[in-house]
Image (cartoon, rainbow, N blue to C red; front, side, top):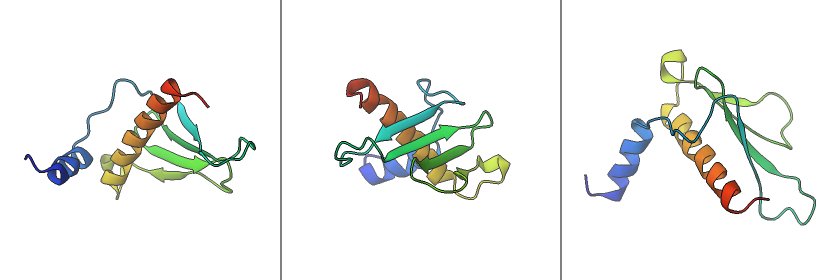
Length: 98
């Protein structure tokens, strides 16, 4: 499995939970082109059952939920990608706070 694409597929299909992340925590990142308004955050969080929730500070209505596969989830790779996104938000926020 030396092919980078196949490594990505493996990660999306079998992602372990990163120890750096916590359930019940929202990982937020302000977008780059806010022009001083400080509006336009992407927010990803996880409920205790591992379901992923995503929304923005501009979003109207309920958050979007991507469930765990055993909880009826139909998009396990999307949910795993959201785990990676949350980790990226956490790392970027630690390195370069808003």
